[in-house]
Amino acid sequence: MLITGFPSAATDTNCWVVAAGDGEQCVVIDPGIGVTGQLDEVIAEHRLHPVAVMLTHGHFDHTFSVLPVCQARDVPAYIHPADRRQLADPWSGVGLPRGTPLMGSLTFAEPDDVRELASRQTITLAGLDFAVTHAPGHSAGSVVFGLTGADDAVLFSGDVLFAGAIGRVDLPGGSMAQMTTSLREVILPLDDATTVHCGHGPSTTVERERATNPYLAGL
Image (cartoon, rainbow, N blue to C red; front, side, top):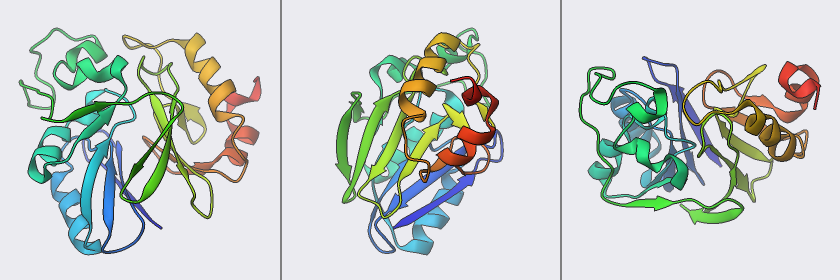
């Protein structure tokens, strides 16, 4: 199994690349601001062949490069329908007037092929099975991706769960009540040994967060 990631320089948003191994097909998760060059380097280094982009939610710091990545390789993008609007209208997700410059860009558009995710579905991409679970709170369409069939359990948590923290809930579509439910019903039931690859910051484990994350302590 190959899982490698790197943060965008602008917002420290983690972009993840997942494949069965070197020379195989791969999935790109959350290509953020200005990551195309570094992503190309990772793909070339490991001789990978992207087949899809998967988005944990619609905020532009996670989706900024989805159009060039998808169009350059003619691959689809997967996103929950509640956040799909933000692909062409990222301002709606952060409460800014439409047309406000976002990291120097004024225009946004969907890739040609956008496919909507449903909760509790498993999708097979690049020979890997990803379990999709809707986990709103940070945004209305936030999801987490569990990598099933791996030797060790793996979760890509987006901005639902960080090491020692959680994603903010004060942007449009955010809800502390929904976040609490997602933490209780989606995160806490996971096996302690699950490795969590977060949308920002270092990776962690469910065991570590259960013991140290103040937002999980009361649940």
